[in-house]
Length: 59
Image 1 (cartoon, rainbow, N blue to C red):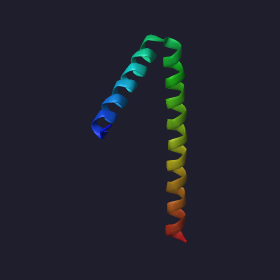
Image 2: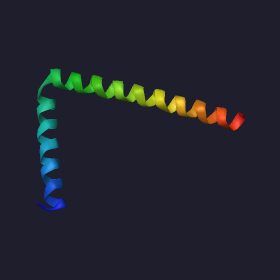
Image 3: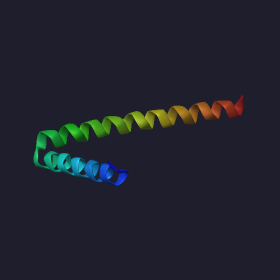
């Protein structure tokens, strides 16, 4: 199987899952909650990196 075929298969699988999520309100809420949690974690990591970076400059 070539990379092109793998990419097409992956795209098809993701499209099918996305369509299922869009039809199921409960799945959509679960997904949006998970995305929100990941975004909060990412923001916290960015703040920590920024704080640590600033400390190194001032030391």
